[in-house]
Image (cartoon, rainbow, N blue to C red; front, side):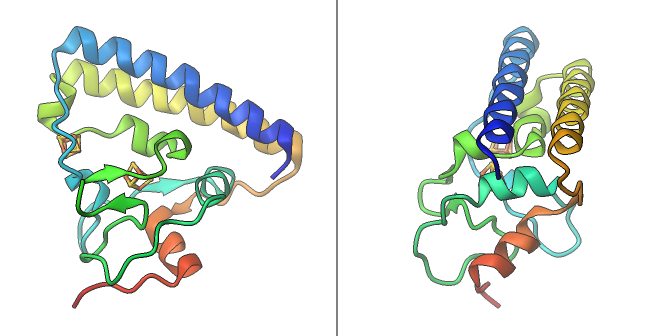
Length: 152
Ligand code: SF4
Ligand code: SF4
């Protein structure tokens, strides 16, 4: 991943974070940082991201750990329930919230719109750098890449 693509992706994330912070302030939502939305058990909705985002996220390996709970993201610290890749997390990570955390439906729609705007900008980065879009499940690809084992 080139330095320019990384720089531009970071700018997209920074702008997205500012927008999300502002709308959550207004909606009165509150995230308890319980980590539930970083676990994707069989049958649950799946987190998707572009190849560019997955590459940036995986540019630092997850910590050494034993088998994870079914569907847990390798970057989730299962003890503290915190993301260990917060600065590199994907658009989907930054825009998906449970009902309690997002506050109200208007904020959920606004967060979705901000995510779409960020993805449009990422599409421009992808085009400029001639890399593939490949919008694919994040956790599945990360688990393959890092050889993660899940508890049965
Ligand atoms: S958004 Fe909701 S499910 Fe996700 S960490 Fe925050 S409180 Fe937990
Ligand atoms: S990268 Fe971080 S925020 Fe995104 S799913 Fe994994 S642990 Fe959660």
